[in-house]
Image (cartoon, rainbow, N blue to C red; front, side, top):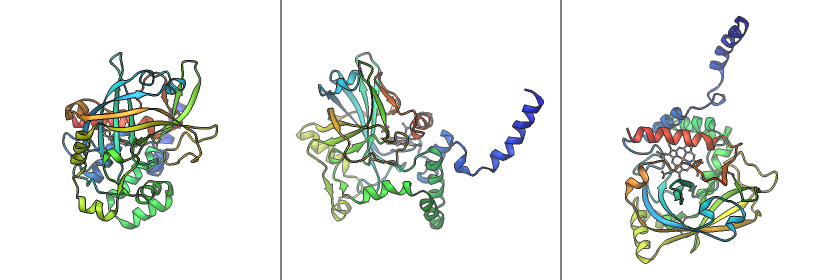
Amino acid sequence: MGVVRALAVMALVPALFALPASAQEAQPEELVDALNGVFGAHAKMRAAHTKGICVKGNFTPTPEAAALTKAPQFAAPVPLVGRFSLGGGNPSASDSQKDNVRGIAMHFQLPDGSVSDLLLISAPIFVAKTPEVFLELLRTVATKDKDKIDAFFKANPNSTKQKAWLTARETPASYATADYFGVHTFYLTNAKGERQGVKWTAEPVGGFKGLSDKDAEAKGADFYAKELNDQFTKGPVEYNLFAVLGQPGDQDDDPTSEWPADRKSVKVGTISITGLENAEACDVGIFDPNQLADGIEPSPNDKILPMRSQDYAVSFGRRTQ
Ligand code: HEM
């Protein structure tokens, strides 16, 4: 390195330290530490979506799906391993908490032995546009200082949208009756090489069913597992999976913003959850939103999406230590 360049780099170092936390790039370890800062670190458990239930089932694509993507799970039915969960890192989180997301994560098991993953939550939006904002949110919440927390949300109004969306509707009565969203934009490519931006939505076949605040409270903290088991005695739990089609100009970089409500959606298949699976089948690996078959790609403009793989790897490393 030439002297002039070395001096220039040294001159930059103090400037970097002077930047506010949100302007520096968040590191995956920092995000997992910050999740632990809010929810505690729980040995052998996930740093987020800690409370969950491992399940199995299958996915059957519609004939229309292949026109959108060449990914094998949209050409013929595949088995799947999945996991329902509550958002956050509290292993004792309450199933009746209204302003928490429910999650469903799935490994579609492909004929060649690989998997293609799909992770959905029960809100169409996330709480932060970038990893840096999410880190700042977690660190601020961990202070438990009401003034600081209020100031954060005032400065970051997009981070208030998920809670507002969740509290404006009823608490899902069951994992089986919640609707789920992929939140991010993904690009699908079909066999002709045509590309289409989409957002995923899964709707329970019988429609969303919720509980009033009073009924949810009366159910207590742990009724989802029994509810799911009761559903399985009657038959599989099924959802229609839709690809909502983006149009030119629709934002593909912001998981805190929704597309206009009039976007066309195509039913691409039925998710059928048939029963419980051994927890180990869900815990030996990572449900990773970027683990995708050829024919599905993450939006290159979204800053949260690539960071998720790194965060999940850190959480996986710690929980399997
Ligand atoms: C930078 C932002 C995010 C961070 C730091 C984060 C962090 C985490 C972590 C640490 C885990 C546990 C991973 C493991 O141990 O296997 C997890 C799981 C999960 N996350 Fe995120 N997450 C983020 C964004 C999102 C978004 C936008 C969604 C929306 C779909 C989402 C949905 C899920 C789901 C459904 C699970 C449960 C997976 C399972 O059951 O194993 N996350 N997240």
